[in-house]
Length: 483
Ligand code: FAD
Image 1 (cartoon, helix red, strand yellow):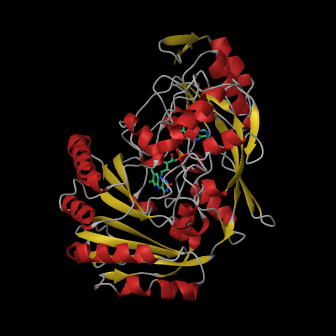
Image 2: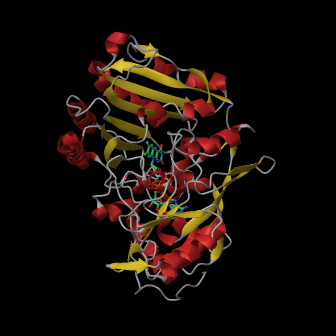
Image 3: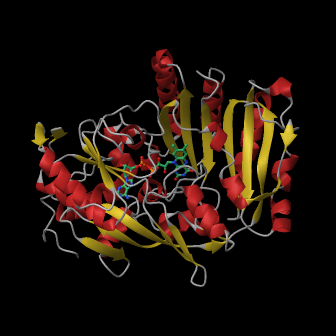
């Protein structure tokens, strides 16, 4: 079977069967053609809106396979997509007709407990990392849904329950192995290839394919004071004002996220509340249990919650607490704003939209960030939004394709209405596929340096199936040099 693949600069090229066979022979992993078993697994992403058919899949099992794939794509001028955990909302892990480098089988995690260092393969999920690190009472800050890929999350920045205490995922990245566009395997760290190390801490997959990550871990758990407070939506205005104050004064250990949605049928929630709009305050204290109890007292004293299920929970279980609401396959469209402060007008805008949720699965998340994350300079890593105190993510989620226009329209309307109260910036990992113009909002003053580094290491823009940073060739002085 002759394989047809999209070219990097447009058009298509035919790859002869012998060339595909010879590619396969050089791999520890496998090539998967469109008619072969495993093809649909490789191309299926978390967001059910994305249904793209790559021309050929390379399912990698090691760094050598990644290098082979990069060389094959570059030498043949092919458009190539790279898949980690497949969670990105924009679905840029797969492209129609392209070569797909699927890293999802590379899920090893190795913990060096004595040095508190964690070595993670590029297909590992957050839950893989938590399971291994928690064996030693350690954790690396990451996100709040355990089936998210470590790779994409890290390359965009990464924040979750313990970020305010221990920093973002990128703040705990010690080094990475990176296969760059020239096919070289580079060790990148603060000492080696520091420009690339700076760029991959927020700049996504623009600079190469990461074959392994090395993280710093911290003592966390095995249990953390954590859980949910669920309130009627009628009380939400006053509660969100109080939430804002608690977040403003919170110690680094305390993180509280607000979720506005229809109540799911949680076993601990009285049945009469199922399907009604509620405000969920989800809290985690990453520290001593008694201190956590004290730090959460004010939050727990607010209003008259329908349920209060805050208590010690295993950290790895808490990390997966939202998984049932975020299972793969549903249709999803997200819109996101950062806020420096959550003013009354922003609260009113969100509450007014929540009166009109387009689907029972849709919700608005308000993530409380800052703390250690904010004590890093905006230009210390490619990720620049260190000043944000809250990040709103409009998680529009539904199953029925006939609801696409209504759901997307609802998300856009809330996004537009909230814009005047926002910081104007956005976390790149929350940017949907139809917002190419938001690259400047995602990178701010760091965009020019990213474009210059891109021009030095990937002048041909081989790694372009991503939130693409176009090489600034006018700024590049030393092509392909490892500065
Ligand atoms: P993929 O879709 O596989 O990849 C995303 C991008 O990274 C693609 O462009 C891909 O080409 C590139 N890429 C992947 N692997 C590599 C590699 N090894 N080398 C080079 N490029 C690569 N983010 C947070 O910070 N905190 C959260 O709490 C959080 N919660 C989330 C919850 C859900 C349900 C979802 C869907 C997302 C969440 N995110 C969160 C956002 C998440 O960080 C991004 O979606 C991230 O891109 C997912 O990484 P992935 O490996 O699964 O993605």
